[in-house]
Length: 306
Image (cartoon, rainbow, N blue to C red; front, side, top):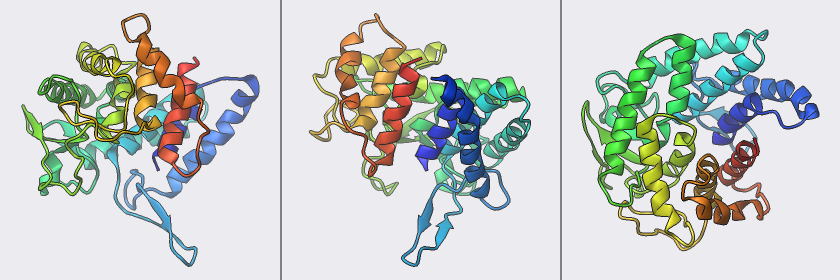
C-alpha cells in the first residue's frame, strides 16, 4: 500500500495544470476514503495490506506500517493547508497523529517503532526502520499539533541515523537497526527474518528523498555522506552492504529515483553527474507489475518538476 501513501501526499501537495488542479480534490478524496475504510479496528492507523483470496473476497491485515501512516499524516497536513474549508482533513490528521504516538512510538527510546505490532513488551519495540526518519514531516506535525514530542522524535531519530551513517566509510544506512536511548547497532540475520535487514536495501533506499528537503544540519550531513558515495559510482545498482559492496548487478528505479530527487534539491553542489545519469528512470516504461518502482518514479517526476 505504499503507492496509496505516496499518492495521497502527491495529490494533496502538488499543482501541475489548471485542469489537474480542479480534479485533484476529487482524486484525493477517493484515496482518503480508501484509507478511512481500511483503518485498523479501534485505531486511526491504516491496515498495511489488503489481499484478495481465490474466491474474490478481500481482507485487511490488522497490523500497521509506521512509514505508511506517517505519509498519510503528511498528506492530510498538506490537504488541510490546501483545502482549509474541508475541515475533515485536519480533524483526521489530529486523530492519526495521536494514534501514531500512542501505538507506534517507543516512549523510552523516543523513536518510532516499525508498526503497532512492535508493542512495548516485545523485543521488536527497539527495532527502527530507517525510512521512518522523516524530519520534514515531523516538523510539520509539530507545527500543526504544537506537541514537542515530534521534535524530540525528530532529533533522536536523526541522531540514531547519523550514528549508523558514521559506522562505515560509505555513509550508508541499513533498512533496520536496534536502538536504545542513546545508541544504535546493526541487526543480524538471526534476530530478524530479513536477510537484507542490515543492508542498504528496499527501505533505506528511500532515505535520500526523505532527507532531501530538510534544513536540519544533521539530516544534511547524513544525506551528503550518502551522495558523495553514490556520485563515485558509474551506476547505482539495487542494494549495497554497509561497506559499499553492490548486492546486485542490475539497476532499479526504487534506488535511483530517491537519489535523483535528492540531487534535484542540491544542484551545483558536486552531485550533478549523479543527477544526470539517474534520469534513466524516465526513459523506461512504467510497469504495472511493480507498484513500488512506479510510485517512486512518479513521485520523483512530480517533485522534480516544481
